[in-house]
Amino acid sequence: MSGKVWLVGAGPGDPELLTLKAVRALNQAQVVMIDDLVNPEVLEHCPNARVVPVGKRGGCRSTPQTFIQRLMLRYARQGKCVVRLKGGDPCIFGRGSEEADWLDTHGIEVEMVNGITAGLAGATNCGIPLTLRGIARGVTLVTAHTQDDSTLNWQALAQGGTTLVVYMGVAKLPEIRESLLAGGMRDDMPVAMIENASLPQQRECRSSLAAMHQAALDFQLRSPAILVIGEVAADHQVQAIAMHA
Ligand code: SAH
Image (cartoon, rainbow, N blue to C red; front, side):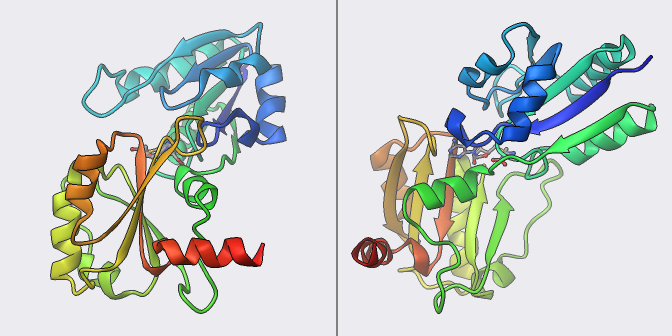
């Protein structure tokens, strides 16, 4: 008899931002395969499960994707209830759907569980309203890091009028800045850089688009961090909200 794989988002870091459904899946799990951006504190919900770390941070020691997939398959074929725990949401820059498709083609039952994605959590935690009425009519989640080095349409992003939330951008700040400036974005566009969103060690740095690289150097910004680029990242927007609170 085959087991089942739950592809679960563990949220941005704060264990209280886990969903009830994630907690239920963890309670039932016999094996938990955990990415390295997941806060290990969430493992209190699965004290009896076997925990298998399968992290693969950019530039660090990594577990190949095919190995992870085969391991999930092996445990599921042993009839085990497997939780694959990913940071944030499993489908936001998280390869959740690729893993689900692969398991599905191998006849394994899969269930996805949403998590709160880091970009949304970080912004809200810092009081940045990503879709502030009258200021931003939308929000665009982008990654600065691609496997095939394909480029984004930066001009469209620069001129689209939505707030940009950039994942995996810390090592690419000069390129992001140049691309958005070349695409026509104002050089004084506000930027917020949020490191370790939702964790006790969360830090945030405010800047302008033009100054963001230098500001990040001065601040010693480290991954994991997200960038919020847009009018809503201005400090005064936060103050306005505080005044209405
Ligand atoms: N699936 C995840 C994203 C994985 S990609 C999600 O939905 O959040 C990894 C990137 O996510 C990091 O490089 C960073 O840009 C962002 N990230 C993840 N956790 C973060 C955190 N606690 N604070 C800030 N950024 C974070």
